[in-house]
Image (cartoon, rainbow, N blue to C red):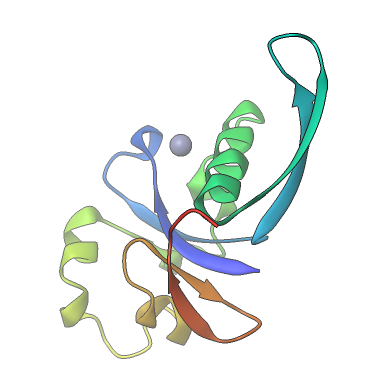
Length: 113
Ligand SMILES: [Zn+2]
């Protein structure tokens, strides 16, 4: 599982810590009606899960692990002022556009995997 600070135009300027699987297998049909299956990882997987949440009426505010894991855009830009390990050690150490991997306990830059 990966943790990440996500934001969304549906939620104004807030950021929320959301934990999601690092990979997903998705199945669908291409423009010719041919069935396709693909494993997505990294940001592609995260974006797909984020958008699927919207189809279920959910936003990052419902998917975050708790109210203390929702911060404003201004607060996010001033992370150097946060108390140590706020709101959790892993969220504190994870910057914008980074994943925290709960298996390895390392941060990774959020690029296409
Ligand atoms: Zn969104």
